[in-house]
Image (cartoon, rainbow, N blue to C red; front, side):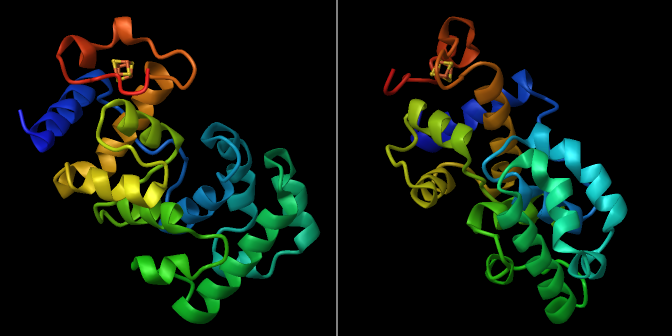
Length: 211
Ligand code: SF4
């Protein structure tokens, strides 16, 4: 099997193991997904989901967010930590979307990464999950699994992204990353990967690199 064939076989197997893998951040619009993803830095998706319902009720769109009082935002964001920086990012995003994009979330990576607090990873989450543009999201799980699967030796997320892109067809990118993340949470954990229960091993698809 070639490298791309093996990587495709891994994704097919993960699709059987984790058929419901999806973006764990609760959202109902590109705006909500953008904000939730920015807030997910340095914390978990589950924790973000505990604050976003109240946040989105109070600030349903970019204009409302742009007009928020900083202290009110910080109070809502406090459970996530880094509330000062995160409130600043949200105020900046609200203002930028209102002033430059008519209140809408832009659909290009270049425009997204120019927003406050938005890096390539956040832009890729929004592109892939809100706009249906194939995008590879390299979080801690995707990076770790890619290395254990022998797809990359890189630690730098951009290099990992490029190595995955060389193996997977674009239609696998967005949901394939959700499946890697789910496998990383459920089986191939950072400290104690459960290789004995992992069908990727029995299928001969994982070299367990680095273990
Ligand atoms: S065999 Fe082990 S290292 Fe490979 S994916 Fe499964 S749990 Fe992770």
